[in-house]
Image: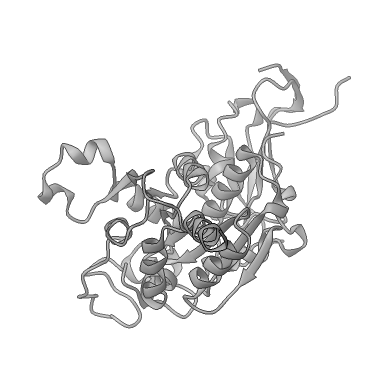
Length: 90
Length: 271
């Protein structure tokens, strides 16, 4: 069993919910979710990790160093939005 | 993993002090990625900044850093470069800091063609002090000291730097971070004064007064206002009015670099 690693990781300590990553994402992976436990009132969440094509648009556009995208070619195992275990080699 | 930012950042200082969505972080990230791709060690880099929102960047990066007086980043950087010619000196400053308050220092650093990389975060306003208009505030837009619209014509940083004698001039925007990173990378590699005009968004101080309070809307406006160099060559001057030409606008490899000229002078005097 491989170590679980998602293609996109949002560091919620650094995220300020500005919404830039959501508009640049071509596959609609990220989403702003209302979260009243943080000062911004909402938080960027990875809603559909299985759709990620690892183009790194969100990582490059994020002004607060909050998003990390794994390089292309690394094999990943993660839980998708429907709760299934997915393995992606590309 | 891709770029490991924690190698170049003082992680204990994060989260960044800038407003949500501020373009300063994108420019800083582009610079760090460019340095990572060049493989420079943090201990070989000196980063100097003046006063302003963007100048807070020196607090977050784990290089040798110095935070100087308002507009006086370039004299300090020139002195550091003269004492340590082997060091990579980068200055990071805002548009008001480098063209208004430090305008004289800027043109003279360009004239000497000393090997500095000057990244100007051009967000069209004095953000930190409360939204006063700067020499780069577009004509007709509002600021806290111009509530009925700014009547001042603007500087063109690229033309100013070219006229003053800088040998590498590029302009990119935060709407296209990869192109910005490539421009900064070329500027860092260039031997001589390199000026990178990074168009950035200030949706809090400039945007809120001009109906662009949302960072996404303002980044889209910046994207609309920029045209590439090749496209601009086919456009008429009327079409180009109010647009920002992006790309590498000027590159000169013939002009002598200042520290080399000084070294030659020292050798000549000693023999």
